Amino acid sequence: MSIDLTDTRTTGQLHELLKETFGFPDFYGRNFAALIDCWSSLRYPDDGMSAFTLDSPADCLHLHVTNLASRPEDVIRLLISAVEFVNQRALWNAQKPVIDLVLSESRQRPHL
Image 1 (cartoon, rainbow, N blue to C red):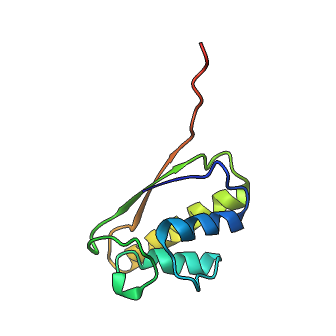
Image 2: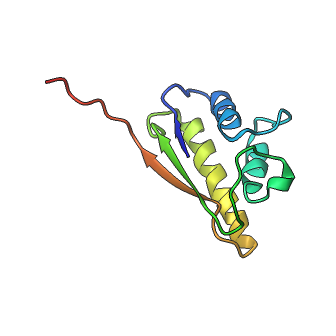
Image 3: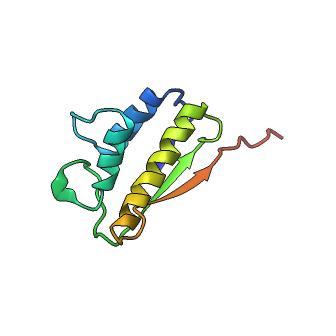
């Protein structure tokens, strides 16, 4: 799965992008705790916390995020901290990490 943060300037915009991308429920609280709950449920489709789910408890989501480094500090901190917490929660439960975060910056090719 890939998300591009080029137009994401606030944590509110990040929450909206993640809600749309993952299909979080209408009652998604758009805060750190709600994000952790939804991402922690990616392996458990019966929870109904995300339209996108992993096929098995052993699967890991490879989340490719473009243009995170050029976002405001609070946006960067929210995304990285949430991934870290979700993965730590999985480890506490003797499971593999849920999310493998892959970061890149888009580069415009120079005009020749």
